[in-house]
Image 1 (spheres, rainbow, N blue to C red):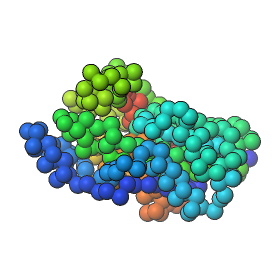
Image 2: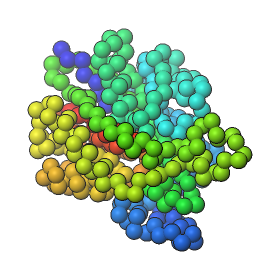
Image 3: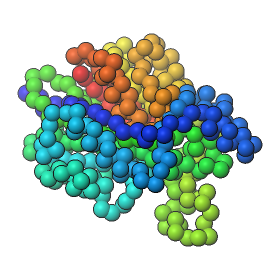
Image 4: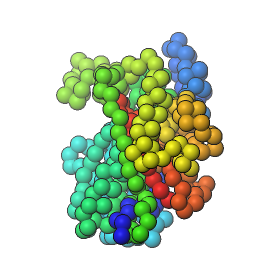
Length: 333
C-alpha cells in the first residue's frame, strides 16, 4: 500500500475592496510615472486589497481556514498538524500557526509551525507537510494556511510594481493521508535556486532592526524592487518544470494541467511555447484576483477543481519566489 497525501479541500479569503487598473494608473500619473503598459503587460485587471484597520495577514488566514472547515466534512479536532505560510506575518512571536490553533480550536494539532519561502511558500509548504504526513504515521490530517498582504509591503510613491501588481488574500488547504495501491496526490517536487539577485527584492528594504528608527524614511520600510527586467521568470520556470518532469519520466504532453506563476502572463506564454502545449491546459487567476503571492497557486488549484478534473489527471504547480527560487510539485488526481 502507498501512503498518499491528497489535497482534500481548498478555500480562499479575499478582502471585499476591489480595485481596478484605473486607480493605480491615476495614482502614478499624478507622480509622472507611467504604469498603464505595465499592468496590461502582466495581465492585471482587478485585485482585492485591504482598505481598513481591522484586517491583516492573520485575520485573512483565519477567515480562509474557517471557510475551509465550513465547507468540508471534518471537525477541527481531526487536524493533527497546522502550518502557516507567509512573508508578511502580523506577529513574529508567537507563531501565527499557534494562534490559529487556539482560535480555531485545533486542540489535537501538536506539530504547529510557521514557514516562509516568499511567493513559492505555499508550493514548498505543501511539499514539506506532505513529506511529514508520508513518513510519520501518527499524522493523518494537516491544515496549511497561507496569507499575503501585498498592499502593506508596497512602496506607494514611486514603485508601480509593488503598488499595483501585488494584492491581498489568503488560502487554506486540507491535506489528508490515504493508503491505496495506486500512487496519487502529491507525487514529487523540484527546486531551482539562483541567489545572485537576492538583494534586488527586499522587504523591509532597511531591515527589521531599522523599522522603529524615526530617521529611516518610510520608503525604506517598504519593499525594494530592483529588477529592471524579469525575463528569467519564464526561462527558469521552464528549467524547473523540465527537471520535475525528467525526475518522473514524463514529457510535457503527459501533463493535463499547468498551474504556473500568476505574477505575469508572459510566464504562461513562455512555458506554453517551450513545451508546445495549448493554452487551454493553463489555469489563470491574475486578471480577476491580481497577484496574491504565496496564495496564488492555491487560487489557481481551486479554479481548476471547480472547472472539473478527471481521476488520473496530472497537474504541475509551480511558482517563483524572491531572490530567487522556483518551486514545483507534481500532483495526480
